[in-house]
Length: 261
Image (cartoon, rainbow, N blue to C red):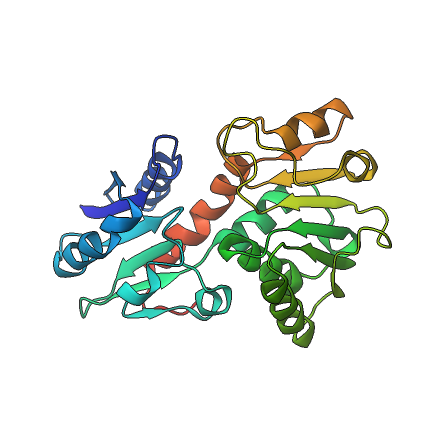
């Protein structure tokens, strides 16, 4: 039996384990995905044990460890390196634990499943952290009519847009609230919505003029942003949809040889 461990803090509402177990079972692989609460100050000790314990075949990684786990891994994929974050790890035959990043492909899969014609829409992305950067890279790789990014860390924002412009499959720009007008798709890749009372990352007029809203926050499923979208009749792609969108890519990677992704 394959043994995987999902780590994060908190982990009270994670939904990946049964979905991943089911995906692997359908392919004839018996697996168990355990859930472990690992606080930030305990990550180094946990990873030292996981690296040494050959019964751990891999890790699923959620907040707040997606960036902090990288120094504890033997290697990471190209996508993870560009995003600066990891959300899955696996053990290679030589015993090394290596990581990859699937947040971006997860959202692209969720959007296309919801019928969003990505190649012809303008997208506003809030947040360029680990998940946000991975999402931006996946959108650009897929192609779109335009991608604007809003991020409070100005230096991170400028680096992100400059990097994406170099290989852009769609025009990429810094969000200009005064000049940019309406967007077809709004994507929240910030933590706003995880805590009760969190505001929406988007102004009401942007929501009212959009056609779709995506919110990577999986719990609670009805964030302030999701509620405001529902009030004006917009379809909402939720964090739970995103979780479902990453199961097949993660499962396929776990079963494949090497780190490439």
